[in-house]
Amino acid sequence: MVLIYSEPGVAWKCVFKECRAFCCAGGREATAGDIRRISEATGLAAKDFAELQDDKGLFRLKSVNGKCIFLNEDYSCQLHKKGVKPIFCRMYPFKFDGIIYADEVVLKVKVFKECPGFGKGFKIGDKFEANIEELGNKFVKEIKDFLRLKKEGLTTEEILKV
Image (cartoon, rainbow, N blue to C red):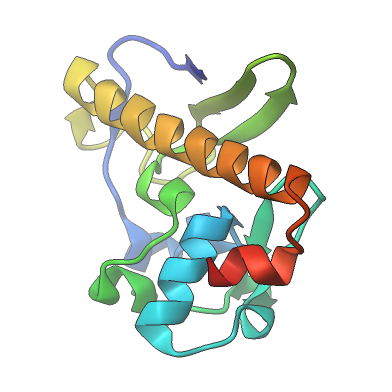
């Protein structure tokens, strides 16, 4: 389940060069599936670019000088060009707002109002929010898969190779 906190009529436009990729500060959240896809596309070992945040399947991309390890000098994304941006990067301008681990795993996302592109460009409508919900459900599925494999006795390293 995905809970989306938004406001009607919100406008947004990506201005990554203008803001120097403000959204890429500190590394982004990622799933084991994201980590596998990135490893396959880049040839890098997971330990070279990601850290496990907790034992519930949430990873974070490493950062260099306060920015995502995959950010280029021109503020473009190396992973975007390879088609393997983590789910949460694709959900922008919505940001991670927490996970509730209960009978059902619930992902909370909200509009990132601090983004310099907030209030500019196109209005975020139902179609855009439906895409965010679809990506959020994929994120939840990958978290559930990680938890299931952990319960079956696999280590994090084994899960990243599945």
